[in-house]
Length: 353
Image (tube, rainbow, N blue to C red):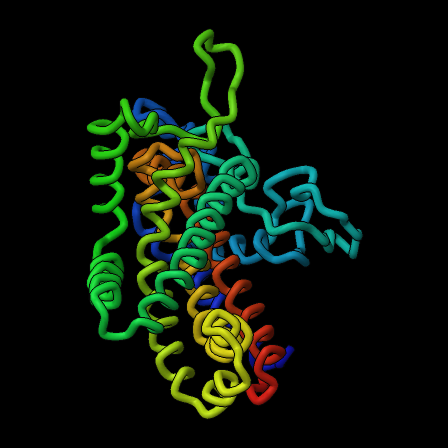
Protein backbone atom coordinates (compact mmCIF):
# COMPACT_ATOMS: atom_id res chain seq x y z
CA UNK A 1 0.00 0.00 0.00
CA UNK A 2 1.40 3.38 -0.96
CA UNK A 3 3.11 5.48 1.68
CA UNK A 4 1.34 8.56 0.34
CA UNK A 5 -2.04 6.87 0.80
CA UNK A 6 -1.32 6.03 4.44
CA UNK A 7 0.13 9.46 5.14
CA UNK A 8 -2.98 11.15 3.75
CA UNK A 9 -5.14 8.93 5.95
CA UNK A 10 -3.16 9.81 9.09
CA UNK A 11 -3.23 13.54 8.31
CA UNK A 12 -6.97 13.39 7.66
CA UNK A 13 -7.62 11.73 11.01
CA UNK A 14 -5.33 14.20 12.77
CA UNK A 15 -7.30 17.06 11.22
CA UNK A 16 -10.61 15.53 12.32
CA UNK A 17 -9.32 15.02 15.88
CA UNK A 18 -8.13 18.64 16.08
CA UNK A 19 -11.34 20.13 14.68
CA UNK A 20 -13.55 17.97 16.91
CA UNK A 21 -11.61 18.88 20.05
CA UNK A 22 -11.64 22.64 19.58
CA UNK A 23 -15.19 22.68 18.22
CA UNK A 24 -16.72 20.94 21.23
CA UNK A 25 -14.58 22.75 23.78
CA UNK A 26 -16.11 26.11 22.89
CA UNK A 27 -19.58 24.88 23.93
CA UNK A 28 -18.99 25.52 27.60
CA UNK A 29 -17.25 24.31 30.72
CA UNK A 30 -17.01 20.48 30.58
CA UNK A 31 -16.90 20.29 34.37
CA UNK A 32 -20.18 22.16 34.66
CA UNK A 33 -21.75 19.74 32.15
CA UNK A 34 -20.75 16.77 34.31
CA UNK A 35 -22.39 17.94 37.52
CA UNK A 36 -25.87 19.01 38.56
CA UNK A 37 -26.85 22.65 38.05
CA UNK A 38 -27.09 23.05 41.81
CA UNK A 39 -23.55 21.79 42.39
CA UNK A 40 -21.29 23.98 44.45
CA UNK A 41 -18.25 25.77 43.06
CA UNK A 42 -16.03 23.47 45.11
CA UNK A 43 -17.50 20.41 43.36
CA UNK A 44 -16.97 21.99 39.95
CA UNK A 45 -13.36 22.85 40.78
CA UNK A 46 -12.75 19.29 41.99
CA UNK A 47 -13.98 17.92 38.65
CA UNK A 48 -11.85 20.45 36.78
CA UNK A 49 -8.73 19.40 38.66
CA UNK A 50 -9.43 15.67 38.26
CA UNK A 51 -9.85 15.77 34.48
CA UNK A 52 -7.45 18.60 33.72
CA UNK A 53 -10.16 21.10 32.72
CA UNK A 54 -8.39 23.75 34.81
CA UNK A 55 -5.42 23.62 32.43
CA UNK A 56 -4.94 25.91 29.41
CA UNK A 57 -6.75 24.75 26.26
CA UNK A 58 -3.49 23.78 24.54
CA UNK A 59 -2.55 21.55 27.47
CA UNK A 60 -6.00 19.95 27.40
CA UNK A 61 -5.45 19.30 23.69
CA UNK A 62 -2.20 17.49 24.51
CA UNK A 63 -4.10 15.41 27.08
CA UNK A 64 -6.63 14.57 24.39
CA UNK A 65 -3.99 13.52 21.85
CA UNK A 66 -2.19 11.47 24.49
CA UNK A 67 -5.39 9.62 25.39
CA UNK A 68 -6.13 8.84 21.74
CA UNK A 69 -2.62 7.76 20.84
CA UNK A 70 -2.01 3.97 20.94
CA UNK A 71 1.41 4.70 22.43
CA UNK A 72 1.05 7.17 25.29
CA UNK A 73 3.05 8.69 28.11
CA UNK A 74 1.67 9.11 31.63
CA UNK A 75 3.24 10.32 34.85
CA UNK A 76 2.16 9.27 38.31
CA UNK A 77 1.96 12.77 39.73
CA UNK A 78 1.64 16.17 38.14
CA UNK A 79 2.91 17.21 34.74
CA UNK A 80 1.19 17.67 31.44
CA UNK A 81 0.60 13.96 30.95
CA UNK A 82 -0.75 13.14 34.37
CA UNK A 83 -2.82 9.95 34.20
CA UNK A 84 -6.54 10.38 34.85
CA UNK A 85 -6.93 6.75 35.87
CA UNK A 86 -4.83 4.47 38.00
CA UNK A 87 -5.06 1.59 35.54
CA UNK A 88 -3.67 3.73 32.71
CA UNK A 89 -6.78 3.01 30.63
CA UNK A 90 -6.25 -0.73 30.54
CA UNK A 91 -2.96 -0.55 28.65
CA UNK A 92 0.32 -2.38 29.05
CA UNK A 93 2.67 -0.05 30.90
CA UNK A 94 6.45 0.07 30.84
CA UNK A 95 7.92 2.15 33.64
CA UNK A 96 10.43 4.66 32.28
CA UNK A 97 11.94 7.07 34.78
CA UNK A 98 9.17 8.94 36.58
CA UNK A 99 6.46 7.92 34.13
CA UNK A 100 4.96 5.07 32.18
CA UNK A 101 5.09 4.35 28.46
CA UNK A 102 1.71 2.75 27.74
CA UNK A 103 0.61 0.63 24.80
CA UNK A 104 -3.20 0.71 24.68
CA UNK A 105 -6.34 1.13 22.65
CA UNK A 106 -7.30 4.78 22.09
CA UNK A 107 -8.98 6.03 25.26
CA UNK A 108 -12.24 7.89 24.51
CA UNK A 109 -12.84 8.91 28.15
CA UNK A 110 -16.14 8.54 30.01
CA UNK A 111 -19.69 9.80 29.62
CA UNK A 112 -20.68 12.98 31.45
CA UNK A 113 -24.28 11.88 31.95
CA UNK A 114 -24.25 8.08 32.28
CA UNK A 115 -22.53 7.69 35.64
CA UNK A 116 -19.04 7.69 34.20
CA UNK A 117 -19.65 4.81 31.78
CA UNK A 118 -16.70 4.49 29.35
CA UNK A 119 -17.49 5.92 25.93
CA UNK A 120 -15.83 2.88 24.34
CA UNK A 121 -18.45 0.64 25.99
CA UNK A 122 -21.31 2.83 24.72
CA UNK A 123 -19.90 2.74 21.19
CA UNK A 124 -19.34 -1.01 21.44
CA UNK A 125 -23.02 -1.52 22.30
CA UNK A 126 -24.40 0.65 19.48
CA UNK A 127 -21.89 0.58 16.60
CA UNK A 128 -22.72 -3.04 15.54
CA UNK A 129 -26.35 -2.00 15.00
CA UNK A 130 -25.24 0.90 12.81
CA UNK A 131 -22.91 -1.33 10.79
CA UNK A 132 -25.71 -3.89 10.35
CA UNK A 133 -28.03 -1.13 9.12
CA UNK A 134 -25.38 0.19 6.70
CA UNK A 135 -24.60 -3.30 5.34
CA UNK A 136 -28.30 -4.08 4.83
CA UNK A 137 -28.84 -0.72 3.11
CA UNK A 138 -25.83 -1.18 0.85
CA UNK A 139 -26.93 -4.72 0.02
CA UNK A 140 -30.33 -3.43 -1.11
CA UNK A 141 -28.68 -0.66 -3.12
CA UNK A 142 -26.22 -3.01 -4.86
CA UNK A 143 -28.69 -5.77 -5.73
CA UNK A 144 -31.45 -3.54 -7.06
CA UNK A 145 -29.03 -0.93 -8.42
CA UNK A 146 -27.29 -3.51 -10.63
CA UNK A 147 -30.59 -5.02 -11.73
CA UNK A 148 -32.32 -1.75 -12.58
CA UNK A 149 -29.14 -0.26 -14.08
CA UNK A 150 -28.71 -3.17 -16.48
CA UNK A 151 -32.39 -3.00 -17.49
CA UNK A 152 -32.18 0.76 -18.01
CA UNK A 153 -28.97 0.60 -20.02
CA UNK A 154 -29.87 -2.45 -22.12
CA UNK A 155 -33.30 -1.05 -23.02
CA UNK A 156 -32.04 2.47 -23.59
CA UNK A 157 -34.67 5.10 -24.52
CA UNK A 158 -37.55 2.74 -23.64
CA UNK A 159 -40.35 3.49 -21.18
CA UNK A 160 -38.62 1.42 -18.47
CA UNK A 161 -35.40 3.36 -19.04
CA UNK A 162 -37.13 6.73 -18.68
CA UNK A 163 -39.06 5.56 -15.63
CA UNK A 164 -35.93 4.25 -13.90
CA UNK A 165 -34.00 7.43 -14.71
CA UNK A 166 -36.69 9.64 -13.20
CA UNK A 167 -37.07 7.40 -10.16
CA UNK A 168 -33.32 7.12 -9.51
CA UNK A 169 -32.87 10.89 -9.86
CA UNK A 170 -35.72 11.47 -7.41
CA UNK A 171 -34.16 8.98 -5.00
CA UNK A 172 -30.77 10.70 -5.15
CA UNK A 173 -32.20 14.17 -4.58
CA UNK A 174 -34.51 13.31 -1.66
CA UNK A 175 -32.93 13.79 1.81
CA UNK A 176 -32.85 10.60 3.85
CA UNK A 177 -34.51 12.18 6.88
CA UNK A 178 -37.49 13.23 4.72
CA UNK A 179 -37.80 9.74 3.22
CA UNK A 180 -37.57 8.29 6.74
CA UNK A 181 -40.53 10.38 7.94
CA UNK A 182 -42.65 9.42 4.90
CA UNK A 183 -41.81 5.70 5.04
CA UNK A 184 -42.28 5.52 8.80
CA UNK A 185 -45.71 7.16 8.61
CA UNK A 186 -46.98 5.41 5.45
CA UNK A 187 -45.72 1.85 5.89
CA UNK A 188 -45.53 1.80 9.68
CA UNK A 189 -48.81 3.58 10.44
CA UNK A 190 -51.15 3.88 7.42
CA UNK A 191 -50.42 0.38 6.09
CA UNK A 192 -49.50 -1.22 9.40
CA UNK A 193 -52.29 -3.79 9.21
CA UNK A 194 -50.99 -5.03 5.84
CA UNK A 195 -47.23 -4.64 6.32
CA UNK A 196 -46.99 -5.57 10.00
CA UNK A 197 -44.14 -3.05 10.28
CA UNK A 198 -43.67 -0.59 13.13
CA UNK A 199 -43.06 3.14 12.86
CA UNK A 200 -40.13 2.83 15.27
CA UNK A 201 -38.15 0.01 16.79
CA UNK A 202 -34.65 -1.39 17.18
CA UNK A 203 -33.01 -4.75 16.54
CA UNK A 204 -33.91 -5.99 20.01
CA UNK A 205 -37.20 -5.12 21.70
CA UNK A 206 -38.54 -5.89 25.16
CA UNK A 207 -41.08 -8.71 25.33
CA UNK A 208 -44.66 -8.20 26.54
CA UNK A 209 -43.65 -9.10 30.09
CA UNK A 210 -40.70 -6.69 30.17
CA UNK A 211 -38.35 -9.46 31.20
CA UNK A 212 -36.04 -10.02 28.25
CA UNK A 213 -35.07 -8.64 24.84
CA UNK A 214 -36.24 -10.35 21.67
CA UNK A 215 -34.72 -10.17 18.19
CA UNK A 216 -36.96 -8.19 15.81
CA UNK A 217 -35.46 -8.20 12.30
CA UNK A 218 -38.58 -6.60 10.80
CA UNK A 219 -37.55 -3.31 12.42
CA UNK A 220 -34.52 -3.35 10.10
CA UNK A 221 -36.59 -3.29 6.89
CA UNK A 222 -37.79 0.32 6.72
CA UNK A 223 -34.58 2.08 7.87
CA UNK A 224 -32.49 -0.13 5.56
CA UNK A 225 -34.66 0.71 2.55
CA UNK A 226 -34.67 4.43 3.36
CA UNK A 227 -30.91 4.56 3.87
CA UNK A 228 -30.32 2.58 0.67
CA UNK A 229 -32.47 4.77 -1.61
CA UNK A 230 -29.83 7.39 -2.42
CA UNK A 231 -26.91 5.00 -3.18
CA UNK A 232 -29.36 2.84 -5.17
CA UNK A 233 -30.11 5.82 -7.42
CA UNK A 234 -26.39 6.49 -7.93
CA UNK A 235 -25.64 2.85 -8.76
CA UNK A 236 -28.54 2.66 -11.24
CA UNK A 237 -27.20 5.61 -13.22
CA UNK A 238 -23.58 4.46 -13.06
CA UNK A 239 -24.49 0.97 -14.26
CA UNK A 240 -26.73 2.38 -16.97
CA UNK A 241 -23.96 4.64 -18.31
CA UNK A 242 -21.43 1.81 -18.11
CA UNK A 243 -23.69 -0.65 -19.93
CA UNK A 244 -24.38 1.85 -22.73
CA UNK A 245 -20.65 2.53 -23.20
CA UNK A 246 -19.57 -1.11 -23.03
CA UNK A 247 -22.29 -2.39 -25.37
CA UNK A 248 -20.84 -0.21 -28.14
CA UNK A 249 -17.38 -1.79 -27.88
CA UNK A 250 -16.05 -4.15 -30.56
CA UNK A 251 -15.54 -7.09 -28.19
CA UNK A 252 -19.26 -7.06 -27.39
CA UNK A 253 -20.09 -7.30 -31.08
CA UNK A 254 -17.60 -10.17 -31.33
CA UNK A 255 -19.28 -11.94 -28.42
CA UNK A 256 -22.65 -11.68 -30.18
CA UNK A 257 -21.06 -12.96 -33.39
CA UNK A 258 -19.87 -16.07 -31.52
CA UNK A 259 -23.47 -16.88 -30.74
CA UNK A 260 -23.59 -15.88 -27.07
CA UNK A 261 -27.01 -15.02 -25.67
CA UNK A 262 -27.74 -11.46 -24.42
CA UNK A 263 -27.57 -12.71 -20.82
CA UNK A 264 -24.14 -14.31 -21.40
CA UNK A 265 -22.85 -11.14 -23.06
CA UNK A 266 -24.06 -8.99 -20.18
CA UNK A 267 -22.84 -11.34 -17.43
CA UNK A 268 -19.50 -12.46 -18.89
CA UNK A 269 -18.35 -9.32 -20.67
CA UNK A 270 -20.36 -6.14 -20.09
CA UNK A 271 -20.65 -6.18 -16.29
CA UNK A 272 -17.04 -7.19 -15.73
CA UNK A 273 -15.76 -4.28 -17.79
CA UNK A 274 -17.80 -1.53 -16.13
CA UNK A 275 -17.60 -2.42 -12.43
CA UNK A 276 -14.66 -0.19 -11.43
CA UNK A 277 -16.68 3.05 -11.08
CA UNK A 278 -19.45 1.11 -9.34
CA UNK A 279 -17.00 -0.34 -6.79
CA UNK A 280 -15.61 3.14 -6.12
CA UNK A 281 -19.12 4.55 -5.64
CA UNK A 282 -20.17 1.67 -3.38
CA UNK A 283 -17.15 2.15 -1.11
CA UNK A 284 -17.73 5.87 -0.78
CA UNK A 285 -21.42 5.45 -0.11
CA UNK A 286 -20.92 2.67 2.41
CA UNK A 287 -18.62 4.90 4.43
CA UNK A 288 -21.09 7.77 4.07
CA UNK A 289 -23.97 5.60 5.26
CA UNK A 290 -22.29 5.25 8.65
CA UNK A 291 -22.55 9.01 9.07
CA UNK A 292 -25.84 9.41 7.21
CA UNK A 293 -27.53 6.90 9.51
CA UNK A 294 -27.66 9.48 12.32
CA UNK A 295 -31.04 11.01 11.50
CA UNK A 296 -32.52 7.83 10.04
CA UNK A 297 -31.73 5.95 13.26
CA UNK A 298 -33.23 8.72 15.36
CA UNK A 299 -36.48 8.87 13.36
CA UNK A 300 -36.96 5.09 13.36
CA UNK A 301 -35.79 4.67 16.96
CA UNK A 302 -33.02 2.32 15.81
CA UNK A 303 -30.55 1.96 18.68
CA UNK A 304 -27.36 2.63 16.79
CA UNK A 305 -24.42 4.97 17.18
CA UNK A 306 -26.22 7.74 15.28
CA UNK A 307 -29.20 7.77 17.65
CA UNK A 308 -26.83 7.62 20.61
CA UNK A 309 -24.97 10.68 19.33
CA UNK A 310 -28.19 12.68 18.86
CA UNK A 311 -29.28 11.83 22.41
CA UNK A 312 -25.82 12.79 23.68
CA UNK A 313 -26.05 16.17 21.92
CA UNK A 314 -29.40 16.82 23.57
CA UNK A 315 -27.83 16.24 27.00
CA UNK A 316 -24.46 17.87 26.16
CA UNK A 317 -22.69 14.56 26.75
CA UNK A 318 -19.70 15.75 24.73
CA UNK A 319 -17.37 12.72 25.16
CA UNK A 320 -20.00 10.42 23.61
CA UNK A 321 -20.50 12.78 20.65
CA UNK A 322 -16.74 13.22 20.23
CA UNK A 323 -16.08 9.49 20.42
CA UNK A 324 -18.85 8.76 17.92
CA UNK A 325 -17.54 11.32 15.44
CA UNK A 326 -13.98 10.01 15.72
CA UNK A 327 -15.03 6.38 15.28
CA UNK A 328 -17.13 7.19 12.21
CA UNK A 329 -14.31 9.29 10.74
CA UNK A 330 -11.81 6.48 11.34
CA UNK A 331 -14.07 3.92 9.67
CA UNK A 332 -14.67 6.32 6.77
CA UNK A 333 -10.94 6.79 6.19
CA UNK A 334 -10.14 3.09 6.67
CA UNK A 335 -12.80 2.00 4.17
CA UNK A 336 -11.65 4.48 1.55
CA UNK A 337 -7.98 3.57 1.96
CA UNK A 338 -8.81 -0.14 1.69
CA UNK A 339 -10.92 0.35 -1.42
CA UNK A 340 -8.26 2.54 -3.05
CA UNK A 341 -5.82 -0.30 -2.52
CA UNK A 342 -8.24 -2.93 -3.83
CA UNK A 343 -8.91 -0.72 -6.82
CA UNK A 344 -5.25 -1.01 -7.81
CA UNK A 345 -5.55 -4.80 -7.67
CA UNK A 346 -8.69 -4.84 -9.83
CA UNK A 347 -7.16 -2.35 -12.25
CA UNK A 348 -3.34 -2.76 -12.23
CA UNK A 349 -2.97 0.31 -14.47
CA UNK A 350 -3.83 2.43 -11.42
CA UNK A 351 -1.04 2.56 -8.85
CA UNK A 352 -0.72 4.21 -5.47
CA UNK A 353 2.50 6.03 -4.80
